Amino acid sequence: MQWEIKWFEFVKASIPAGITFRRNQAGETPEEVFSKTHEDLMKEGRDWLIKTSESCSVVAALIAGVAFATSAAIPGGTLDTSGKPIFETQPAFQVFSISSLLALCFSVTALVMFLAITTSRFQEKDFDTNLPVKLLLGFSSLFVSIAAMLVCFCTGHFFMIGDKLKYAAYPVYALTCFPVSIFAAAQFPLYIDLLRTTFKNPFEHLSRYKV
Image (cartoon, rainbow, N blue to C red):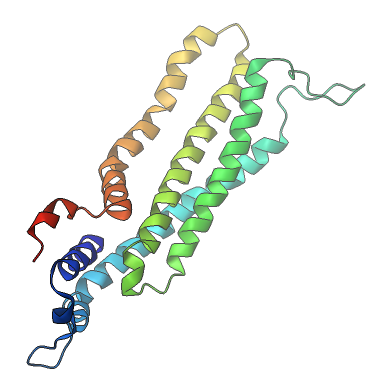
């Protein structure tokens, strides 16, 4: 639907301004004809956005819950005298703290973006920039939250194994990140298309053919 809107805007800008106000034999303006002929496509886009947002919202909510519980759990406990974390000086603890915070923040951001999509009015103009930007922010935040959650898990697990099996655990950590890579690769074409059509008209290279 976004490509159709971009094409309509390009054609409208390519012809003399007076023509866009003319009506056809049925008394319809170009905007009315466009809306009438794209009702089914807009409905399909709305259904796809709602289903995608609902599915991603469930994942974002789960990550937010896990990240919140993880951020309150301190690996190794705290010192009885000062109350500071025992592993405070270790780099792995710093990575654990930052990654858990990032997972919580970005998962909540993704959840808000997907909820904003599901509660949208889904008007024709929303498919041009409003909904694609929200979808981009939602996908980006969800991906970052998943990656941060995996980093948080790996660093938290690192404290449990200590120096005994750390070299054997590295391949396992790499395999743990493999599903995120698959998810990113599967969504990458859609991500690129959204970026290209949202922030730049894909038909600008045809501007030399303007009437």
